[in-house]
Amino acid sequence: MQVGRPRGFDRDAALDRALRVFWQKGFDGTSLTDLTAAMGINRPSLYATYGDKESLFRQAIERYVQVVACHVQGALEQPTARTVVEQLWRGSIELVRNPENPRGCFLVQGALVCSDAAQSVQQALAQQRLQGELALRQRFERAVAEGDLPSEVSVTDLARFVSTVSHGLAVQAAGGATVAELEAVAALAMQAIPAAASR
Amino acid sequence: MQVGRPRGFDRDAALDRALRVFWQKGFDGTSLTDLTAAMGINRPSLYATYGDKESLFRQAIERYVQVVACHVQGALEQPTARTVVEQLWRGSIELVRNPENPRGCFLVQGALVCSDAAQSVQQALAQQRLQGELALRQRFERAVAEGDLPSEVSVTDLARFVSTVSHGLAVQAAGGATVAELEAVAALAMQAIPAAASR
DNA sequence: CCTATTTTGTACCCATCGGTACAGAACCTC
DNA sequence: GAGGTTCTGTACCGATGGGTACAAAATAGG
Image 1 (cartoon, rainbow over the protein chains, first blue to last red):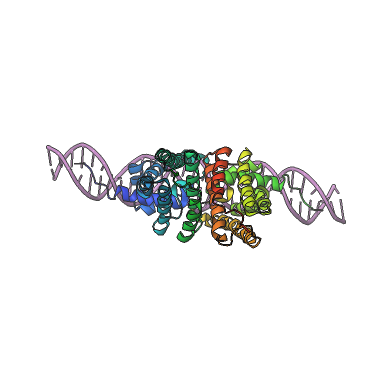
Image 2 (cartoon, rainbow over the protein chains, first blue to last red):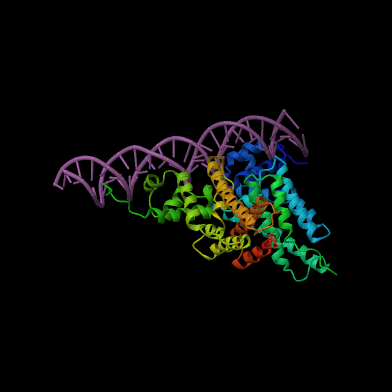
């Protein structure tokens, strides 16, 4: 058993609260006072548990990918390229329905731009966005191999397009777009996704 | 003639420099020290000429719309809906070529999210984005009236889609995408723009 | 030249920033 | 209960944030 005074808060629950603050205000717009107030702990507890602000932010990224953006993994397991994209966008749009979630995508707005001091977290987020793009490309490669996408299409470009629309939807959501409006945009964007190759 | 000591710098040139800083670092990530260093002036001159940080930011928005995003107006004057969209995206992507411009769109990344104190500038940028969407919708209404777009399409949704892709491209650009990559995405997105109505 | 007017440079204001020292509180093992 | 260990609360640190007071400098009109 762990000796010493036990921690008085749930580590993941507090991390979730920190994530929401970073998500809503961005790295530069978030102060330690904002964080400790939302997490319900004080600074020494924060530093002892998560390290400094940047370290906390990086843990928030991990948490976001695993807990909030978990629909991405589900979407990638869909049987066809089109359903993958449909589920991806549908799931992203569904996030807006939950009023506990700040509007928009944390991976986009957490630190799209930032002060000089925060550039490493900016790069970390960009890296995560690229990671999503890569996963899509690999999924589309599989789709081509399975005859589910015409072999003429560039899976790289298609993955980048899907990623671009996702990020565009995130900006729209951050600007206050409704679920219905986002769904209409996604439906239009689906027209650019090639249908299954004829056989 | 104006009495008193003459201003020692060019108002618009210094505003351009301030715009670049806000564009690159965002409202929260930009300090007055960053601004005065880039503008080549000191704080009292800045405050006397532009007002406080928020006022300077709002003037930077105006400057951006009129000087940097001027290709939007040109695009709207294209003869058909498709060429409007083509020119819009082409012009936006061209901005990335100029190394003096920070990557991405100022209207998106200037304050996509922010601290509590900066919410009014966040709203001002969102308003400008909506303004662009509105201009597109009106242009598409004209296109429908001219038989240039099928009357079945929702011009509202189409405008929102074009705006969404634009903002997505901006996020891609901010993440380091090349001109060629952005052009490939735009080409794919064009497939969702309806062709001229058959007559 | 003298005065009125405006801009510039220095030097400063207070509030807040991220981060920490330190003492007391709360647990474990013995 | 004693000793060791870990966490919490307060109170603080130097640095930086946005913003300004004030005097010197530079012009125009007289």
